[in-house]
Length: 110
Image (cartoon, rainbow, N blue to C red; front, top):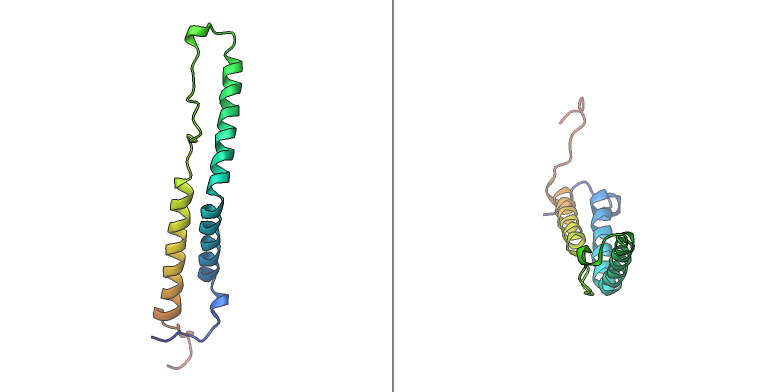
């Protein structure tokens, strides 16, 4: 199982996709608390604007939101996308590097 073609792995777009998705995963893991806190703040501002817009509605009919620090929109979709990108790019990089055969140019003797 040796690399095919002898080209540098830096030339593969799958390698760079792998590196980028690994950086995204690391960033998500490092900044999850900050992003979640910011998302909660944005959601609270949105709900406050909604509440202010409903000021013409009688108080009994107003909709209340949950005063929680947990955001309604979580980070899970970002983790899923980053992990899928990581696995797909790494798998394609390994396949391209070790298992794909170099193609012969048409018209050249074998």
